[in-house]
Length: 342
Ligand code: KG4
Ligand code: ZN
Image (tube, rainbow, N blue to C red; front, side):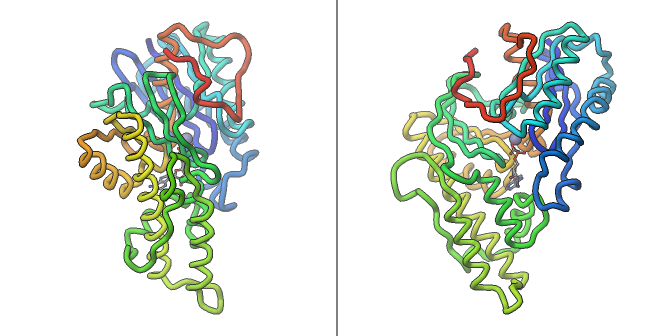
């Protein structure tokens, strides 16, 4: 089956075509980062309007790139949630309309299921069952995955998501939006031994996370270290970025190790924007190898939002016979555990 996937849940318009026999055929991405950068964060109304401008042209582009015609598409998948309601409605309306026009089935995909399954696009994908650490701008979750759609939430963030914490710290340090990759680049120049930040919620049992206290710790350190004009010197900025990144990575590793022990599983999958972080990947690789386990992640461009993961997840569900009715589905909040198993 050949499925067109459409992602418009936040600030990236992603469109891709996945074929169950041949794999990913083509993939196009347009990032709105330049639009939102001037405001230091995503402006939902501007995001929706830009998705309207970009979605259909990208659909045309991806079909051409795959050297196909519209009649070659057997199904349409779109992100139905969670995300920004206006942004979701664009992809959902376009997806449902294309399905109706082409007379093919459509399916609304859960954005975090898309992330969770993105490592399946790689040449050596993980095998079920596994533990997944989902770390994006909106979610930090540990999930026990028995098969596609059979998800048990083991723990999640009680406040800020890991990516959100990266973005807010980036802003506090005066780095451009989005903070995550810029904090990571800055951290490369930093000294790991100058500051030590807390590893939140690691000294008590459980698999939940909390990053807002760490964020406050960063804010206090910045004000202590700033000069009379509120400025940081370059080395101190890099040292703070490094200490923050070390604290997030160490916290995530402790919880992942705990989740593997608790479930008795050996395979760990990391997904979502923060799983592109090199230090997180390298440190988790060490920790998982030490425990004779295996770590899987997608290539960096499929860690952050993209259409390929939606095309893949939608293809699996459509092949299992699931499809939408005639309504246009967009759910800003949507629990991963409520999905039907395949
Ligand atoms: O999955 P994603 O593209 O969108 C959501 O579903 O939220 O994740 C975006 C998040 C942002 O917070 C971004 O700053 C963060 O992922 N991110 C990173 C890195 N690349 C993206 N955080 C840390 N290190 C990175 N290299
Ligand atoms: Zn995402």
